[in-house]
Structures are given as C-alpha cells and as structure tokens.
Image (cartoon, rainbow, N blue to C red; front, top):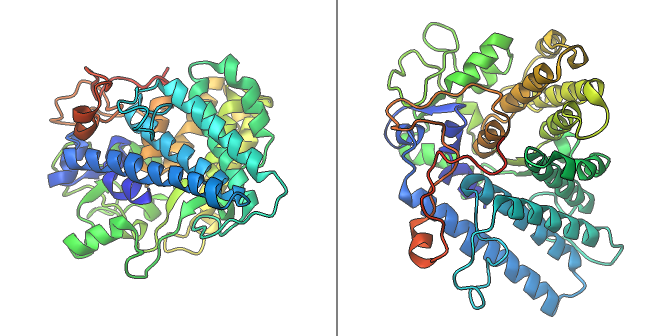
Length: 426
C-alpha cells in the first residue's frame, strides 16, 4: 500500500507542483506523461493485492477467529483509506462490486460520490466494532502498535476528510455529519498521526530513499522545488524553506516551473526529506486542524471565523513542530516570528480566511503529493501553471485507467481525459 503512494505516485508531487522533475522520467511526469507501468502497477497492487488481502483477512477472522473483531475494524479502515487514494487519483472506480469476481466479473465503475459515501460507511462500521468492549486483540500493528483508540481517531479523521470533499458539492447534506465528527476523537497531536514508519534496516527503508540510493548514488538531482510552493513560501518568509529545499547557487530559494529544463538556478529538494526512515504520513494532526478551520470558515460547522482562527493557528503550530528533533528542525524564535506574522482570520472576509487556511494546508502537505494535489482540486487556493511542453490546456485532475483493467472490464469508462475535473470540484 505505502510503496504505491511513495514511489509509483511520486509523480503526484509534480502534479501538486510542490516538486519539479529535472529530466527523464520525472520531467515526463511533470509534463503529464504518466507511464503505463506505474499506472498498471498501482491499480493492480491496490485492487488485487491490498484490497483482496484485506477482504481475505475479514473472511479468515469470521471463519476461524470470530472473537478477534478488532482486526476486522482495522481492515475496514485500511480498505477505506486505500479507496480514498484510488478515487482521488482516478475518480469513478469499482467499489460496490469490487473484489467479487465470481459474482461481478465486470464490476461497474461507481460515481465518486458513491465511493466517498461508502468510505464514510466503512469508517462508521469500524468505529462501531472498536467501541465494543470485548476481549479482542490488535496484532502485528505497524501503524499504531495495537492502540485501539488510535484506530478510532484515524477513522474519524478519514471521515472528516471525505465529508469535506463532499461538502464542495452538497454542503447542506453533510453539515450535520461534519459537526458530529468535529466533536469526535480525532488526530490532534503529532504523536497521534497515522503513518507507516520506515527504518534504516535493510529491506525496510523508504522506497524513495531506496530508489535514489540504488540508481543515483544517493544524489537528489532528480527533484527540484516547484515554483508555486516556493513563491508562496517566499512571500510568507516561511522558515520551512530551509527544511524543504536547498538554496540555489545565489543563496536564495527559486522554484522550477513544471516542464522546463533550466535547473541551473533552481533549488533542489533537501535530501533530508528522503531519508531511509522517512515515514509515509497517512493522516496528520495539522491536516485535522486545517480541515476543521476550513469547515468553520465555510460555516459547515459552528464557530465561524473566530473558531477557524484558533484551529488555523493550531494547524500551523503543529506543522512547524513536526520537525522538532529532526535534521530540519525550526528554531522556536523562527516559529514564534512566523506565527506572529499571520493575520487574525476573524478580521478577514471568508474568502481571505480560506485562502490563508488552504495555503498553510498546502505548505504542510509537502512530500505528500496525492493529498496536496487533491487539496488543490478541492480548493484551487494556489495558482498552478500548465506545464511547459505538456500539450495540456489545463491542470491534470486524474490518471488514465489501467490498460490491464481496460482490456479486462467492459464497464470501464471511455472518453475520460486527464483534464476532466473530479466530481467533488466546484
């Protein structure tokens, strides 16, 4: 699951325009040449390996270990998380008929609304199981080390995210559910975040680290800073620039416009962001607070701009604190100065407040390309450039479907282009 997010979808960092490819395969990703093997690998791994295995886990527990119901809850949460990635990359995908080839050899492609509502249902089912006071164990847990409360927090946090995507299209229908989840146990601290922690142990390293070590001798000449992110952070004098990027030869931070070749004066991605033990961060505390601030500013939930400001500042603080104790640590003085420079959202218009919230959310998602790309689709808060020499007329919204699936499934949608907006977009 994580390897697909980290390496097969490394190109999503370019689609989010936080990174830019310097040449070869990665410049091709910047120019929207997706690569058939990567698309096929990710689709196949998520559907026929990850989701199939999770389904088998549920069947095995039901048959042989009926008391271990917490494992079923884990499987449902992981299933929902995988589907959230799948639908955010492809849009309409098999969901209601997926994973049952005997009954549905040609599964239909469900609407994105159906998939997102289904993910929320999976989270509700998992939470209901985990809230039962039974003698059940959570074993071999690489994410939360068997902490039942942590799994509940993650399920609620995934619900919050899916409901916020749907709020773009049907705010009145999800408002009460957003208020309910806002009052629930969520991921509120950096220590609580959902992630897969890689390690320096051979075979357990971060896949990006393995890639640059095996093929590029540990050099990070592949990836440069994307201009929209650098320009935004320069305007804000953001102290995370030194954490995210290297200065160029002139001692400043300069981003590369997608698809261009002139890397001589562009800033590279700082190698400390791709270490052996760099985790794949699934859901973070800063994201929770930015989503809550977004919901309050949009009046989907109570609190208005005053409450949005409180959550906004908490999100920024947690995003800065995340690097404490790491090679990219930010000094307390720089943190305090930066936070003091931000406006009080309650003194702004709704639109101005949302711009600040979503800009900070976008900055905090650095390195998590799928999430940053989909935040842009939902909010459009950052100005993106159509990549040079891409042949595109708009920003990429989705991937083409797997050629393997196209050959096997007569129900696959036709005439879908990578520029077609997702259902959840305004």
